[in-house]
Amino acid sequence: MLGTIAYTEQSYNSYRVASELLLSYIPREGRIRFSDLFSQISHDHPGVSYDQVKDCLFGVIADLEWEHVSDRPGGDYLLGHTSRSYSLYLDLLHSHQDPSFCISNTIQMPGTGKPKDDRCGTIKFWKACRSNPQHHLTPAYHNCHRRECPECSGYWLSQAADRVADTFEGYESALRRYYLKKTGKRWRVYAPRHFSFNPSEEKISWLVSAAVVRVDASGVSGEGWPLAMVGAFLDVMREEFRRWLAAADLDRAGIAVIHPFRIKEEYQDYAVEYAKKRNDERVGGPKYNRYSALATLPNWRGFFDFSPHVHVIAYGKAVHTDDFRKAVPGVVLVNHSANHKKSKRLDNPNKLRGLVGYLLSHAGIVKGKDAYTLFGDLHSSKLRKYVICPDCKERIPASEVQDGAVCPHCGRETLWRKELCTCDICGSEIVQVEIENGNVLYSDDEHVCYNRVYDFWYDFVKGPTRAGDRS
Picture: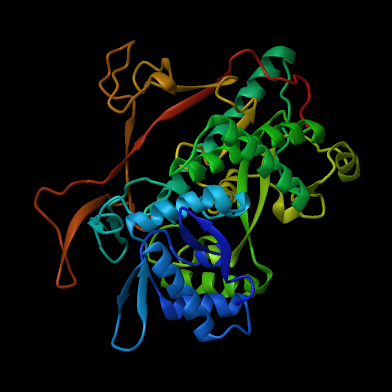
């Protein structure tokens, strides 16, 4: 016996199966060295012997026909799934696995998937100041814009944070116009605040059980079961946090982000040091935080506990935490923008953009599900987004605008305008260049770099939900 890492006496499809814990150390994609696997197991379960783990592991290989390739004579092995063993493993998850384990081992964080192709993260071209390359010389990378891509997820984070920050700014502008038109006076709109809803272990178990009931009722099984389980859990979680928002009096307008994991206590210090190391090594892209740095490791799941909670950036003053606890037992409300935390106040767009980027850096990522939820007056059904034509200044609903769309009013071929990229030091244009043997080469037909800029306008469909409430 190996404690919890041991054979079960139960048979499944005429095969003896290993315990869930041991199976959890085998990656679903790629391979892992046996020495690395043993290190992980011995870290979590001190006292187990090398021979115990080896005997148990190779029993799994025999039962489930795992692929094992000798990495070097007399030593390590590379372990990975075959298509047959992977199918058995999915069935095992469905029939014998703790649903919480299934969810935590299926849900991803940004950057923990696979690149779209070999070009992701490679240099597309170089950009330099036309007057002096020492002023400005940076690479432009190939970018697939996918949130699960380990090379390009940082760009998705930046773009998503910009979109959310623009929505908040547009909401406040629409709110000010509404008050000015209604009262003839300029009204101050108070900045949004950062909160989190933290369910207890009992509450999390209830959420998981509710998701299991939904999946079982749907009849999904086999390969589709893990993904269906995660999708159902996120749906239940979103339904519940809407009730939590109402109980906290924070449902007027805002954004919610579900975090499935927390860093294990014993890895807190390591996470800080590893983030510093990654930031020292990085070239371009957003800075790493504790979560995004650990997510770059092959065995990143081992550093986290499954502890789902919801972060919210919302307008309004929340009820007292004691009152909320009475209204929603088993959930703790935390105000991260309390009065004594002045540095945490979201009183300018850059702070808001930075916080959104941080929250999205370790959001739960599931295929077909949004990484964040806009609620209340920020939802698209209540706050309409328009694109302003650069020529005729008419407003076209953003939902009707596609890349290269023609203005239906004046016939302009594009609804975006060019914004030239200029050097921060001398103001010269930024152009595409080539690098040869470390030297910057300018071409005769220089391509000037520019950004595509859309001018947006936000307005309410019927007016704000709580007219007159600005807190």
